[in-house]
Every structure is written in structure tokens, then in C-alpha cells.
Amino acid sequence: MKTGIESISMYIPRFGLDIRDLAKARNVDPSKFIRGIGQEFMAVPAPDEDVVTLGANAALQALEGVDRSAIRTVIFATESGIDQSKAAAIYVHKLLDLPQNCRTVEMKQACCSSTSALHFAMATVALHPEQKVLLVASDVARYGLGSPGEPTQGAGAVAMVISAQPKIIAMGEHVGYYTEDVMDFWRPNYMDEALVDGKYSIKVYMHALEEAWNDYRTQSQAHFESFRHFCYHLPFSRMGLKAHLHLARLEKSGLSAAGLQAQVEPSLAYNRRIGNAYTASLYLGLLSLLETHPESLEGNRVGFFSYGSGCMGAFFGGTILPGYRKALPTRVHRDLMTNRQRLTLAEYEAFYTHTLPQDGNCYRTDRHRTGAFRLAGLENHQRLYEKVPQVKVLAADAAEACAAAPVM
Image 1 (cartoon, rainbow, N blue to C red):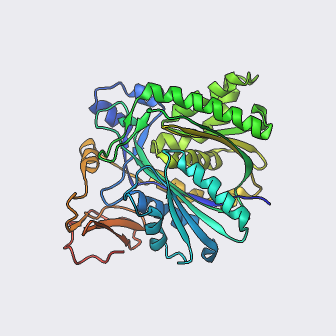
Image 2: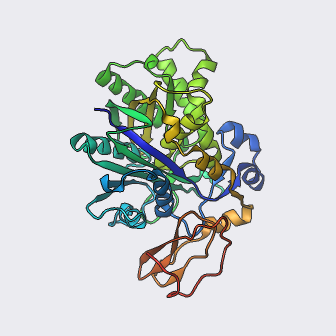
Image 3: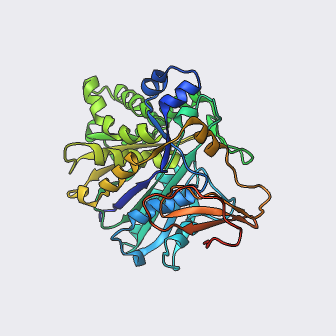
């Protein structure tokens, strides 16, 4: 039985910052950001967006044409959680009007939790082939203003329907794992921004890649030449190429530098224009490969490396299915990428510094240009979400009175 991705979609904020504007403001040569780490544009969420609204918007598109009554599990993977107890999956479940006979959970292990969610979803489908699983990976990457990590920031979500009727990619049964307790990246409960030891984190990433790959080879008997393309977790786009060259050296690949770059380059295009989206980054890379590669990829095997700081690594593979292009909402994604409002530095910093009240009092967020769902505000320590009338542009409005706006 094949198990894999039946549908997949992404959602990104309608706002962003040109990396050149950030470089100018921080007195940095733009080439350090553009060529050094490979970033060009940074997705920036509006004050009325969070991981729930990003994820729900991605899932809304992923569920187009899918039998919702077959969705029995919703898994939400994030490292930008909004509640210590309640799963973000429950909010998404309600916003999407999914069946109540449904299991809803949230998973966490840094950026790797989306991959663990994928394999839990596959196991569920293997036990119950008639069921489908909605998997949502959604995050907002935040580092301190002016910090070394600032140019790698981003935000976005990917939603996938996992089923026994995959239309896009059939996943292999083998996975190579590696886990070690390290402190390369972490975010304490009392902080909004992540703490990271950048150089050390890259070193740990590479080691986890080696170990997960070795375990995968032991489990599957595969080798480097088994794959035509590779997708890597992308904290910044140059990391994907660095990781691939490292793996190729380990395996003594006979491919030229140009040949190796061709194996990974198509997966980097979206990350350059979005930035890091933590749990969603690997699967944004998959979408980038599928939607930007000029030639048909039908029948090609893809190798995936998922990395979560702290740390856990996973290597696995999949095969792209015939007719996959028909199942992709490529035009929707291109519109998202091209129709974004470019923020000034002052607007970006205002979005960045906006926070919800910590006292739980009644608060309404200003209305900005969002997708089908938005974070309406806060009341009695409860986040309030609402569906948005679908118009082309929503201008920022003044905050409404506390009891006025319909909320969910």
C-alpha cells in the first residue's frame, strides 16, 4: 500500500521586508545577506496573524477537493506555540469546520516536529487506510532586532493531507534517526525570541545529517545515487547547498559541483523569498522543488533531511508520482509570492514589536491584509479568531470595540 501526500499547500503573510532594506538599516553590505546566506526577502506576519491563522489558511487550500469526513486526525507541528496546554490543532479544527469525531494534537521538537508528525500520520493511515490525516506545520521565526539571526527570519505554514491515495509523493517506509542533547538553539518560556549559537548549530546540523544518513542506509540499503533530488531543512537557503556538498563528500559522489547544485537548487527558491519558517521550512523546500523545476519530476526519488535543534535529525525518501502537477495549487502559491506588500523598516519594526497584552484584558487587533482567517484579539486570556470576508485588499482599520467583532 502506498502512503504519502495527497495534497499540499502553503500560506505566507501578505507582508515582507526586502533584505536590502534591512542590510542598509543595519549598516551591512547587502551581499553578506544575499550571497552569504542566500536570502532576498523576509516574510513578516501582521499583528493579527499567528501560527493558527497561518496554518488554517494553508489547510483551507490543502483541503480543496478532499473528503473532509475522512479526516480523523489533525496534527499541528510548531515551535511557536501559543498555549502551554491546548493544542493549536483545535483552533484550526474549528476554523475549518472539520468533523467533531477527530483527534487533534500538537507536536514539538524544534523544526523536526513536522517530520515526526508526517511519520505518525503515515502510521495512522497504515492502520486505517480509509482515514486521512491533516498535517499542519506553522511557525514564525523571531530573533532579536539587530542580531546575527535577524536576516534569516521568516514566517509561513505548510499543510498536507496524508492518505493511502497519494497524488503527489509516495513516502518510503524507512527513516534514519539521530538524537543528542545539545544547546545550539532554544527558546525559554519567558522569551519571545530564540537564542542560538549559530556556528555551533551548523556544526551540530552537519553531524546530525551524517548520523541520520548512516542510520537510514542501515535501515534501507539505499545509497547517495538512489536519489535524483534532495530537500534539506533550511534555516537559510545556503544551508541546503552546504549540507548537500557535505553529504556528497562523505559518500564520495562522482558528480561535479554543478551536478550537485542542480540536485538541490530548485528546493531553495521559495526559502530565498520567505526566510526561515522552522517546522514548515523543509516542506516549503519540497513545494519549491515541485513547482519551480522546469522539467517533469515524475518517478524521481527525493531524499529529505529534517533537522530540529536541540537536537534531532531524520533522513527519509519519497517518490514523485505521475500527474503530481495537477494536484499542486501552483498558481495560488505564485500569487502569494508576488502579491506581497513591501514594508518599510519602520513598519517592519512596528509589526515585530507588537505584542498582545499580558494581563489577559479585552483587546482587539487592528485589521490588516490577511487571508481567510485572522487573530481578532484577546479576552479573559483567550485568543479570539474570526473568518475574514474574502475581498482583494483589506486596509488596516482602527481597533473595534471589545464586544463588536464576531469571533470564533
